Image (cartoon, rainbow, N blue to C red; front, side, top):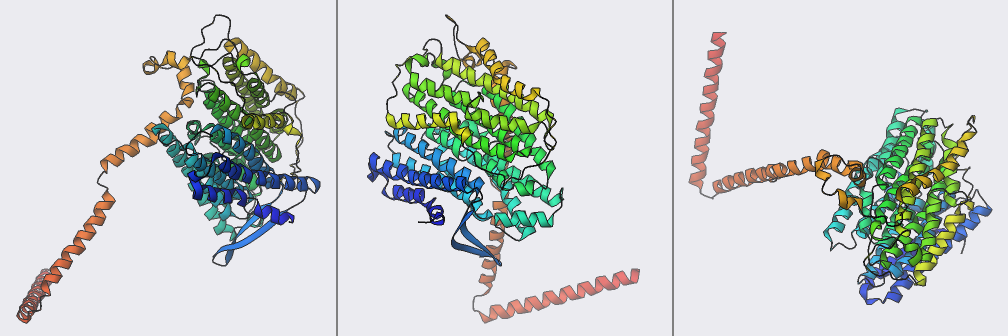
Length: 633
């Protein structure tokens, strides 16, 4: 089997598994369903590992697998073709590699669920959609994967749909991301109209030959693509769906937040970077979106009690760093952070899942405490994830985040202001991370239930592998210079920048220790319970942070309530009334004319006579009116 065949089969392993799981369903035992779903992911992961090794030995490797012609659009053939270069190499390694570990963990986590086969089928389909998205040779296939990811997120977030809150969260994610998807679709249509091609490489090359820098049409196309990216990657202002997506099972949270859905927007901008380089204004907008999101999400994380919601806001913040890097033109650093973030965020979510299982589905950090003694191995693994998240020196997160900060200060589309925002974001990250760590793992245990030890090897082995990747994943380097040309800038960065960037997380640890480390005899209670009575009486900072800085409330009053009001006002649907009116008009005249066709000749003759008389009367009346008017003139 040659390299192109290995590439061609890559997305079909999980696709075949999905079809078998759907067809056989509950007739499969847990073991057979696990062999099918996790085995398919193992084949994809092994294929990706082999292709990664080929790409590392020969950095300029580009593979294209033309599978079949999909359809024709005018004279343009749209092929079902997969394209592998250094960027998609990074993405398939993350999607299939981290996705395999999450699948293995999910097999243990969801073992007792009665719909286990259906769950694993959805997980497999999620991977298929994501692989198509990152391997697409053309914009149509990319959009197919893009929408497939959205559909699978809806199915998985609402997997336990019997709880109405889960169903609402799934619908919210689906609707909010549709807003961004609409922008993306319009942008792709414009791109096709302007270039006449759907192949991604050709589109970028044609855009460069057709447009000059700062061209208006390129500006609007890029802005629409950014609209799609902020929806999928939960960036400002379409970020509100992500915290609620925690309603899904924890492996779903890990898959969405680490390896798949939220990285799609980052991938899109990185893939179309040739187009974005023509519009420095849009790149600055991207940088602002990332900068504001990382601050907003970091502050919101400080007000959460649910351990999964802290991690959810952390994901938004870290994706903000990636957007900031892309906006600054630091594409390689942004993609690098995408990879390392997948390692440590999957680790954090899955260890959080083990903690939740051990505590009988308790997710409130203020009802935990003292877990370092009760779950020592899980605690150590969680600490490693936190170390990478705050960019502790030596971890993979340190390598990628420092690479981003190093390029911000002198960037033509970013600059010193963005560097300071990045550093402040690192400080907030450190504070909320260690707040979570101190409250959860130190002090006395505050739960009412006994703690179950975590001994299942199918849970522990993926966590240990992810912990190793979170520590040393920064050493995995792939040459992206052929795809992302280095922008030559004069580096006048002050020497103290790196010192401040490295020291900032430690300052955050000290602040978190002073504010949140449990002291002997101290009452550690959930602030959200204490403020519940005061919410209606006025401003409460904690409540404000806990509610994601009020964006849900803002959108409720700006969009949801007006829409509901108009819907009630139009409950009979004015459009339906117009359609019904047309139907009534046609039907009435039909009955009238049908009644006149009764086959009686006398009736026909009488009607003709009446018609002639009426016509003559009209003609004579009109003539008299005309003559009278002419005389007056």
